[in-house]
Image (cartoon, rainbow, N blue to C red; front, side, top):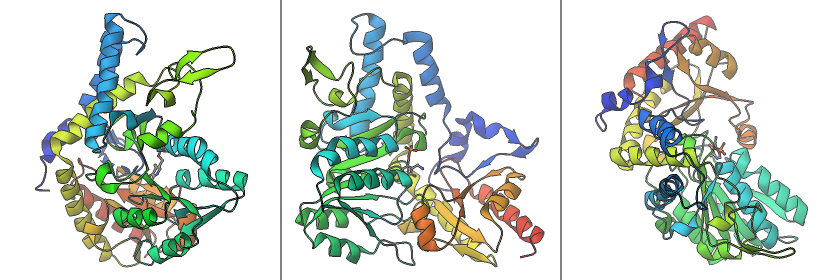
Amino acid sequence: TSFINIENIRNDFPILKRKVHKDKPLVYFDNAATTQKPIQVIESISNYYLNYNSNIHRAVHELAEEATLAYETTRDKIAKFINAKNREEIVFVRGTTEAINLVAYAWARQNINKDDIIVTTEYEHHSNIVPWQLVTKEKGAKLEYIGVDDNGELILDHLDKYLATGKVKLVTFSQMSNVLGTITNSEEIVKRCKKYGARVLIDGAQSVPHMKVDLQKLDCDFFAFSAHKMLGPTGVGVLWARKELLQEMVPFNGGGDMIREVHKYETTWNDLPYKFEAGTPNIADVIGFSAALDYLDKIGMDKVREHEIELTKYALDKLSQMKGIILYGPKDATKRGGVISFNLGDIHPHDLATIIDEDGIAIRSGHHCAQVLMERLDVSATSRASFYIYNTKEEVDVFIKSLNRAKELFKI
Ligand code: PMP
């Protein structure tokens, strides 16, 4: 597309040069699951292990100081990237899943009581459903759902109905659906929740990698995302939470680094955010994440978004002309991310993904960790193509051609 220099970008991703099934160029359309990594990220990790590998925070030697600086600098970059007010509000975790579980354990278990309500949505990933089932069952509280309409958007009347009971303590939703691509009207939801004093957690796993996110504008209470969906390594993610909340929350894990003083029977906690970072963290991958943030910053998140809108619009136009296709989610590419879920005739998504894999195309098929949404859509599975900065219109053409081959095979 015209928004980014795609050739230069593709050159930074060694994996895009490989062939699959002997001689097929790789078309990687499974970016909602995890993205590929540019050479800058790969090299920053190996550079750490080659040149300054050491544990952080405690030692005074030069290697430890370099490692600590690189690790802590990543925290500053993240705060800037999502426009958080304080670096102490950035807690490193393993990923979105761990971030949400941290809130469920260290905040919800202390603040949710019998008959309270937690509200989530029908288009959540399992990681934003199961932790709330665990907490509400334990506390005798209720879990309620904001429904999804036929255009793939949340039905906010449902939220209003629950808020009006005065019992809602927490509302939690993803800023972008990993199946429908829907971009949630997050600021509006936060505004409504505030009137009733309900806390808000936003799952940013699919939004932060693909659009500009401004936490001060969003004004939520908790925010979670993963590095591996935005060019970074696996095993690193972020929980952002309001300082006041982190201060009153109980620790999630106990151990080294999260303490100030330990006595036989009593311990005092370290300052934020270290109170929530027990044990030796994933130093190398946090440093790798730093390089991923630099990479995205250099392109600019507005450009990333524009590129994906153009690619999604191009793909949606072509797909919607295909006989027998059902497309899920908003029709307007400006209201959604670069995630396209669909079903083609009665071909099972796993069969479809297998056929187009023969042509070198990697897509995802299945329930996408969103079985509640599958039930709502009344399907057992969908196929899903998802784009990122290195994908091209030519790749979309290859994808369409391959889908047509599948149609012929299945006589659709
Ligand atoms: N929420 C959403 C919307 C996601 O797409 C994902 C990843 N598929 C997750 C949460 C979980 O992220 P992770 O596996 O990195 O913890």
